[in-house]
Length: 351
Image (cartoon, rainbow, N blue to C red; front, top):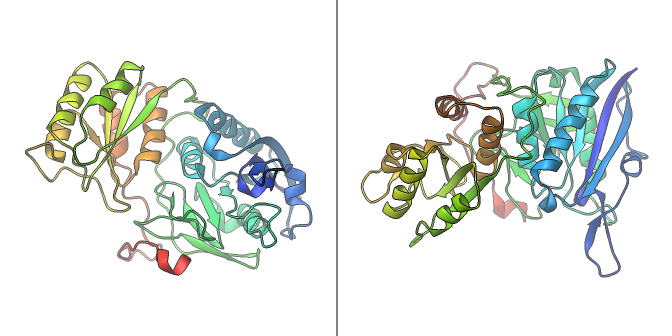
């Protein structure tokens, strides 16, 4: 009998209302899996790892989840792993696990938008779907997946795109990689050309501090320099457009990178590649010349995880730049045809 290991970590899927009406992660892993429809070819083993709302997840908890995934995959009868996680920061933890995942067996992240005690919670359906994906031979070699509302996305590049809609996650650049119907029929629409892990699976990011600095009209260097003063190992700029800022921030970037600091240039725009296009007055050309590394298609949250992992693994500045440069192009269509034109989620239809 093949086994799907379900690692529960808390989040909305494991939340109930307390006496004040606030949702608190408190439901055990065995309770979450009780009564679910399961694939006939697999059994389920639950690892009740933690009960945290994911807005309170730190690097130390992400490292702990990664260790639990590796431990689950050390068993020869494990055919796949499911991680239940709060939606607020699921994209970061899934990114970390994918960056360190070197195993053909699938790891599937899922959660819920409605709490466990909600009358029509989406948690049981999402969890049953995720277990089916983890048990399916079709999921092999795809790395870490995110399963929500019957749709599968590759971890890298996938973000939460709606605060409350059931279709909570999307890859705005490349779209879904598969679907699940009736908790059983798993269909994979693309073949992922996965870049291998960026470091050994036991690399830990707990002691690596990476901060995100927002760029907006009139922003100056004060936030950037405050993070440097607090001991940041790296900074991700949440810049505008293609990745633009202003002259004050460019000067701060240049001072710090010359002193050995690491800066990654991302964007607040939901989709599209970050690349140097504009020069003069603090554009992306100026930022890259000052030492910032473009994040490709990664947005700030996941760019932060990649930078933390690379620094924790002792990668050089050149190796870090190469890792970000190879992030964008990983999702060709299985037919060999050109990838479809990227489209943003239809937020209006989600409401």
